Length: 297
Image (cartoon, rainbow, N blue to C red; front, side, top):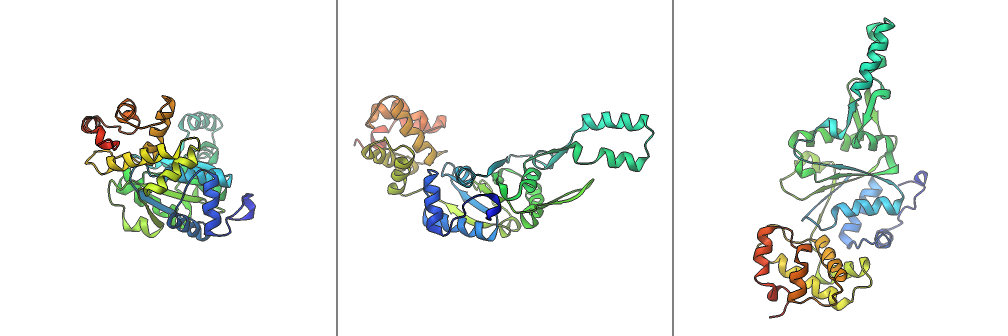
C-alpha cells in the first residue's frame, strides 16, 4: 500500500488488527499476520474455511477501512471469461459496422474501429486491473468455478495483467489487493495456490465468538451472548448438513433482540431457530433436542 492511494497503511500487525477492529472485524493474530504479509508483498491472499466464518466479510471491511472500491467477482459453476473479464458491445459494434460500410472503410480500419476500448464492456477482473491499488478485488467462492476458469486466473494472479486478443495486453499500473475465498467444496489446484498466500479461517473459540458479538452488537448482554455461542457450538457438534457459522450466530442474536428476548431457552430457541438453522432436514433434527442445545438439561 502506498501513499498515492490516500489511505493510511498499517505500520504493524497489531496496527492492522486494530484497524480491522475499528471496522467491526475481530481478527486473530494468525489472520492479521497473513493479511499484513499479503499487503506488504502485494500478493493475493487465499482464504479457506467453513461457510459463514467471515471470509467474504473481511474483503468488505478492508475496502471500507482503506477507502478503496470493492470489486466482487462471485464465482459459480460454468462461469467463463465473458462474465469475469469483458464482453464486446455487439449492438453498438453492429451500428458502427453499418457506418463504416457506408463510408467504404478499409478492412484494416474497420477492425481498428470496431475492436477498441470504446466497445469494451468491463467485467470485474478487467475493472480491477484498471483500478489497480484503488480497489479490493474479491474473487468469492473460487471453488465453485471449474478447472478451466481456475487456469484462466493464473495470468492475472501472477502478473496482474490480462490479454485481450483484439487489443493486446492490459497491465495494472499498480496492484489491487486481491482476496480469494473458498469453502473447500473441492480441492484447488496447486498452480493457483502457488500464486497466493494462504490462510485457513476456522470457527472461533467461545470467548472469541462472544467478543465478536460484543463488537458487532454492544447492547447484547454478555450472559446472553455466551449462552447463544455455547448453543451454536453444540449445534456445530451435531451431524448437520449445514452447520451454523459466525454469520448465523450474529443472525440468532439479532433475531432474539427483535422479539425482545434477553434469554435463550427452549421456547425462544424454537421461535428463532430459522435464523441459525437453514436446512429443512437440520431443522427437524435439531427441533427434537432443543433442551440439550440451549443447555436446559
